[in-house]
Image 1 (tube, rainbow, N blue to C red):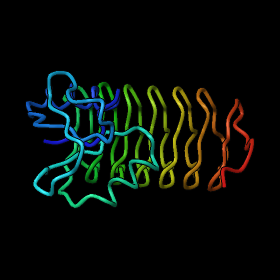
Image 2 (cartoon, rainbow, N blue to C red):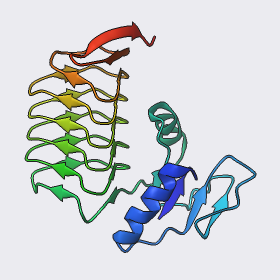
Image 3 (cartoon, rainbow, N blue to C red):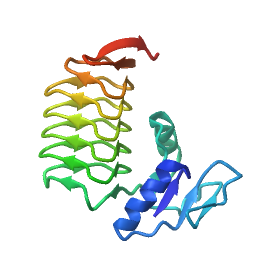
Length: 196
């Protein structure tokens, strides 16, 4: 397994892969200053032979740009402590961290991050490149659009639809639909500004 990105997010993914019994052979990072991370070699350019690959960058847009740029087969990382229904579908490049619960008939897109201790209930749909932060609770039948970041500790009530490339601030309670491309936060969550 290879990782593209050698920051803090990569360190967590390395721990997940180790728990899965998978070897991280090398990392790729644009920083010429970094030659090693947690005992693993860091290269500074991508080679087509570096597959399977996980883009280990927390920023959703940067992760998307790299995933679309590189020519590689993508892997995934799912920590053994995660509890995931057999009916869940998880796409390539996605990382599911320690203590996550994902319930029946949920769909997780490509290159997503489902972070530590998040809870995703039945029939949720998470778009590509989304980030579900630590301790987020998504109740049933929630749709999270492509590239959206749900901040730590947020609770989203059943049936809510959150648009593409939006940010929901940490600790929010989302009880109504949120449009594309906005920053929204609070209890009750409200749109603060457009991100476009």
